[in-house]
Image (tube, rainbow, N blue to C red; front, side):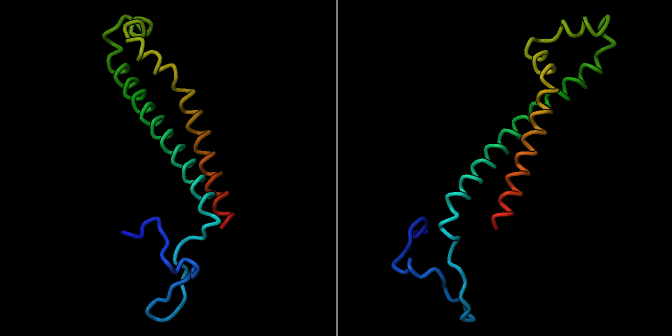
Amino acid sequence: DKNSGKRGDDSADSTRSNKNNKLEPKEKDDSRNDCDDDINDSNSNIEDELERLQYQLTLIEALEERNKAQLESFADEQHQWESLEEEERDLLQSKVSIVERMEQMTSELVQMWMGGKSME
């Protein structure tokens, strides 16, 4: 679209006529766009982080399932733990903090969404 991001000569006119000659807004109120953009950026950042944490949690759950299935091949859980790669141990140890962080971020996202709704 050649006018994408630009305003034409009719920029002072904030309405347009539809086929029934009813006036409708052309675009969002510019006074809210900066605020909306900030909220959208924050939402996007939180959503990206939640997605990353969800991926880590999925890896943790897969490791737990694998360990559960393989436990019989080890003398005990301690022996199994010691056989894990350091990266796997770190990931398993981070489960509680990942779940807590996901809950916190989900709450923040809901609060931002509710705050955005109250501004409408």
